[in-house]
Length: 187
Image 1: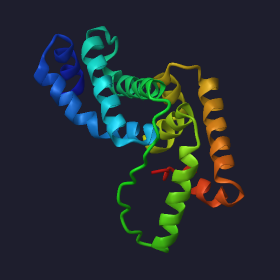
Image 2: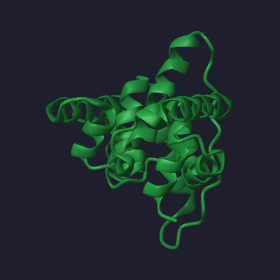
Image 3: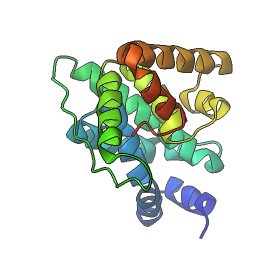
Image 4: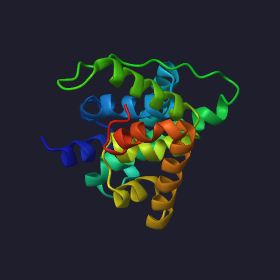
């Protein structure tokens, strides 16, 4: 059964079809939310909220083929809502284990990852969202713009500003780490 059929069935209230859609996308939505929120429990709550909204609004989805972009938008918006509600809560970072590198010094990779993580924590949630969707999820800038429902030029400028903010947060010694991030290895 293809995704379009599942979306149409779920839109008509089929819980099993919706469960299959969730199962196919939840790991990536949780990863996106963790990278934006930097808090595993808050990320789970945001993803749950995004799926609740998806279930509620699925009958109004005009293009079932755009489900993934729509779920990303719902997840990003739920993350931003969660941050607004918990502005004063300290952020805890939990780094998943790093798989060993086939080439290079593992200690250096851990140090690079730690440096990137420190820089990432200094960014605004909106900046983290753009970086995560582009570099982690692999969205092109036009798809990113459509997902966030913003003009293409705005998406380009937000990405540029987020990269500039990350460069600033990393400081002068962060240029090497940023090059790693720009290759899609933020987390």
